[in-house]
Length: 194
Image (tube, rainbow, N blue to C red; front, side, top):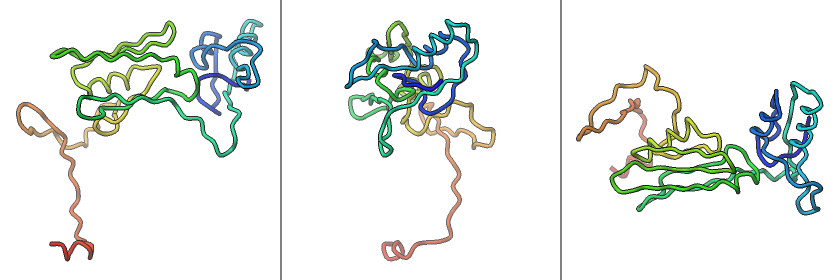
C-alpha cells in the first residue's frame, strides 16, 4: 500500500501487522475530504480499511508529493543553556505531525533537569543531572525525537573494549583521551610561522 501520511519514514517499506502499528508508524489520518491547499492524507485511512477487512500483514510506504529538487525536513528544536546552546532535538521523521509536539524543560537549581515531550496522549519524560546525561536518556528512549550535539555525536551502545582507558583530569572528573598518530609531515605554510 502506497500513500501519504503526516509522519513516518519516507520512501521506505514498513511491514505492518495491525492497525495500531500503522497508527504508531504513520500517525492518525486527517479530515476527509481535504482541500486543494491541504489534500487529504491517504495511507493511514487505507490501512484502516485493509485491517478492518481482515488483512493481517501489509507492506506500506509513505510518499510525498514534492518537486524533485525539494526535500522534506524533520522539525528540530535547540535546547539552550544560560551561556550557550546545549543540544538539538529532531523529530524522528519528517512531516507536519511534529508541529503538535509540546516540549517543557524544567531545570530547578541544584536538582535534576526534566524534559517532558507530549504529543496527543503520548507523553515522554526524561530526567538527568546533566545535559549530557539527558541527551543519552532521550537518545535511548524517545519515540518522538532524537537528540544530538552534546558534546560530540551520541553513542547509544557501550564503548568498545579497544578504546583507551579513562584517565583522571581532576576533581573526580574523567575523560577519554584518544591516541592520535603523530604526522611526520609539516606543511610549507606552517614552517614559516614557527
